[in-house]
Amino acid sequence: GESVGLHLPTLSVQEGDNSIINCAYSNSASDYFIWYKQESGKGPQFIIDIRSNMDKRQGQRVTVLLNKTVKHLSLQIAATQPGDSAVYFCAVNLVPSGSARQLTFGSGTQLTVLP
Amino acid sequence: NAGVTQTPKFQVLKTGQSMTLQCAQDMNHEYMSWYRQDPGMGLRLIHYSVGAGITDQGEVPNGYNVSRSTTEDFPLRLLSAAPSQTSVYFCASRWGQASHEQYFGPGTRLTVT
Image (cartoon, rainbow over all chains, first blue to last red; front, side, top):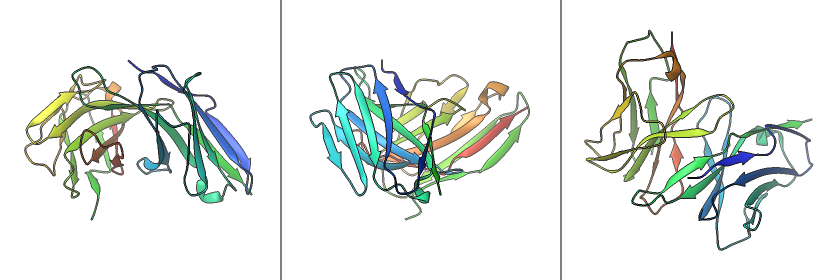
């Protein structure tokens, strides 16, 4: 199986600063990693993903870093804005034998952007 | 496109009652799934479907049934509600088994008293 953990349940940053949210996973066979953002009262929204054959991927103001050696994943948000305040989940994709791909989610980090 | 829609948004049940949570998507996605979200925990997979007529169990299937008679709809049935099923339920869909980008519905907040 797979277990996924986030390092901090909460994170507060000043508006304009960079944010770093961390995630650890357990199964070295995991092949795909995804970050989701969940605003209050809404469903999770896809942010960015990365395959296991990569160690870095950049999007708009976001960067995901993957360290397979220590099974660690991070999401970096540049110039954090008030609209970035949300819960951020990492999800790890594993293909159990004989089954469809399934995602295992971490417990989430609540990011609060301070004015 | 409306994306993934869920009804109702809120529901209160008494222990032992049954009900169906509705989920529909208009993106012609093959893969649909149900998750529950509890405080301090990540989303946990209840049931999923890789296409019409095919369903399978996820991590926490007990107390729930699903069916997939059409591509668009994937209802979740609670057979006999228990307080432990108090949670927020999310339906999600994606294009196919090989696809990774899931689209989530807005959720149903269920309370069982």
